[in-house]
Length: 197
Image (cartoon, helix red, strand yellow):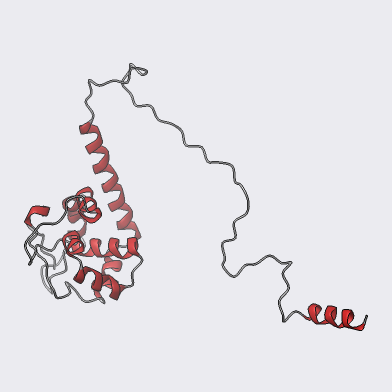
């Protein structure tokens, strides 16, 4: 069972227990503005066809918690702890006011990952990119044309990868082969031969 939240939350509506307001320039507040929560909500609500059972956590809470976990590299438990301690993270996952108790149990992160699998995350990423593209097009005035480009179409530079330089060792356990370790028998043999001279 799933209940859709009522409308998009704005930063001015978030209540702090110690008065004051959240900073609109915070990275989590900016990220929350970029994500089209309501569009994604429609896709998410389709995962719950039944009207019976326990009410699921809102999409903003599920997706927000997964984003926080991946961006910061936290474990499931640490993600919930960080959300509990930080009002910006609580705003990001859609809570209306700061609360001291955890918003959900860390074991729910497993269910969030099951519901929002790679296929759905890919769709969400495309929705975010499309919404940003539409915002950029609205921000541009069609009357403003590039003087070097009278047709008004945008100039796009083609990205060319740089030529590889040097070597990269990816595994921390890798080491060049010319280093001999104390357990190497050739060292013992070499020491024996030098000692005889």
